[in-house]
Length: 308
Ligand SMILES: [Zn+2]
Image 1 (cartoon, rainbow, N blue to C red):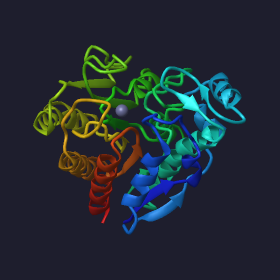
Image 2 (image 1 turned 90 degrees about the horizontal axis):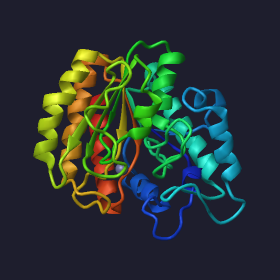
Image 3 (image 1 turned 30 degrees about the vertical axis):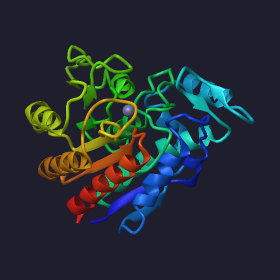
């Protein structure tokens, strides 16, 4: 089957101030790197409000919409800005993940990659945070549970920063296993292994600053893969951040592009064993443009290889 690539030009209309790391050029570079690949290209819809409501109260959505400026920028917190195109971009980002879940669970495609921004894994229930407005990955997980009737969905977040938002949104959801690896210590400061969810449904995997691919592979083999095998997910959602790359300016892990390729291949193999290969991957961080583009390309190539 095919691998779907889901994106929308409006995701380029979420603009941040000059010098901000989460910038339009990130998605442009990712899309350029994926040109020429034999992907099933799909347009991201605006998210259905009922799907945002899986994880966010209406007051949160209303606050984001109300904060969007008619021109220029509005600053939501120290790191998080919105511009006149941001709400639609964020609605497309969440809509992309919902569509990806539908395509994969309806067996229209083997797996899917959502090339979207703003990212989502730092957005908490009622708090935009860390460049993120809505919890894209968590919304996808809830959609698989609520609309498709799945019993077990796993989210694996390999962004270098802790997926505090996804952890928050799925903390009480016993049907979802959230696994997040992160450099520790690092912003946002959460992600200690003692944070385990209301139903022992969260696994935090800290990685030491300056550690590299060998340490990552060992941690995933010792902790992440066995936990996934024990949980037996029916769908795996990936929060695919590429900021653990050695060239990334925001963190200090030393992964290579080949480490992202290896990790994707392992997760695809696990998905093949556990859930007919069903993977939905959504873009999170990654702030060195070349490393991001190269790593995303390797990631998608492995998804395609697994789906073929
Ligand atoms: Zn990150």
